[in-house]
Structure formats: C-alpha cells, structure tokens
Length: 149
Image (tube, rainbow, N blue to C red; front, side, top):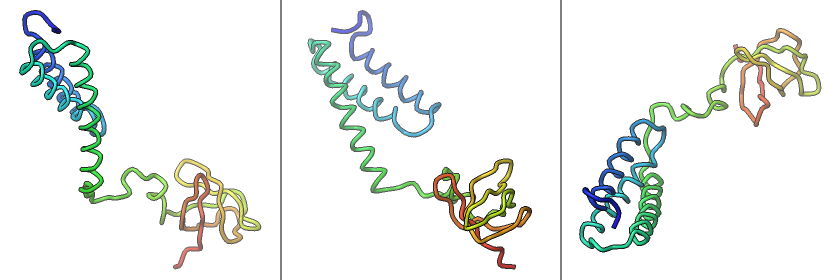
C-alpha cells in the first residue's frame, strides 16, 4: 500500500487534485485526463485496500490512456468554436495584408517586407517599393497579388 497516514486513496486523490489545478496553468487540455485517471485509481485503492503499488500504477497508466483517448475523440466530435478560426495560424493571419517589395520580383520571385520581417515572395513582376497584397502563404514564401484598387 502506498502512503502512511492518508493511505493510497488519499495520495491518489491529492495527485488528482494537483493535476486538475495544474490544468488551469498550462496551455491546452491534457492534465485533466490524468486527474481523472488519478481519481479512478483513488477509487480503486479505496475499494481494494490491499492493491499492490504496481497494480495501482498500472491502473493509473491504463486509465490515463483511456481518458486521453476519450478526450481526443470528444474534441474531434465536438470541436471548440472560435470567433477567430485563424487565431493560432500565423500564415493564415497574413493573408490580405499589404507587403512592400524589397527585392524586385523578376520571373515570379523576389522578396517583400511584411511588418518588421522580410520574406521570400512570388508573384507578378514588381519593382522595389511596390505594394502588393498577400494572397497565400506556402511555408516561408508569400504569394503576392496586385492590389485591386
């Protein structure tokens, strides 16, 4: 049995609470699944007081895997709606911005300044200082198009 005064159920309960609280301070959603597994393990340790430590750790590992798989399926089936679907997609957020050509675009290739950075650019031939709109981003290359107005 793990623990002395509070016993294994108390230790697993405390671990679950610590993991649940830690979930509030780390990005993403993951630790809550481990907290659920710790809670289930606490219940098992309470129901079976002579459960060996190896079995408790095995149960925690097994239930952690099960909880993570259920969580992944939940988020796949019920995705979180966002008012800004491009929030974490830096490339997608650049589409529509205006770029200034810093190296002439000849034969479809050149460089452009976007914000405080300079990027490889592809698009119609353009001279230094020309302003073009970002139509798409492929890796580290921006695809530019003429301004429509």
